[in-house]
Image 1 (cartoon, rainbow, N blue to C red):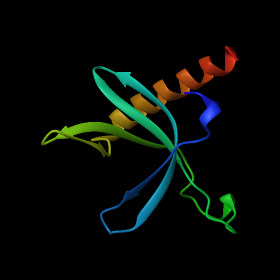
Image 2 (tube, rainbow, N blue to C red):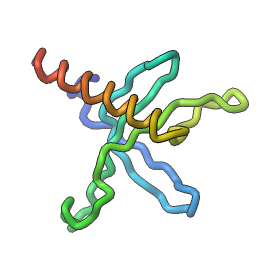
Image 3 (cartoon, rainbow, N blue to C red):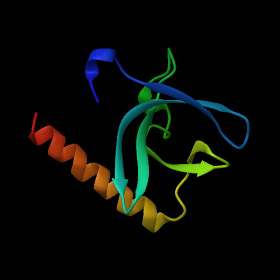
Image 4 (tube, rainbow, N blue to C red):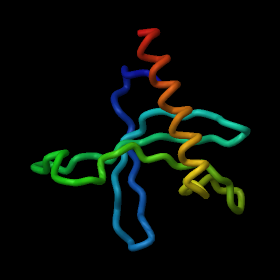
Length: 97
């Protein structure tokens, strides 16, 4: 992803109706499934250390009724496998920079 255009942000609504703004980090395909990694944004005047919710957020792309949606992962095992793949990809990108 090119930095020339600046960061990409999306806003999602959780099951409680709360809007969550995320910054896109990267995407990867693993076993035929597309996963996307995001970091939650820091609200103006809020310190990143003030909350525990600033870890990497991984969602998967699913198609329902012809519409592409982002969904949480189905299990801790899937999350761990995908997280490890993202970390490996990010380390490779850093080494090639």
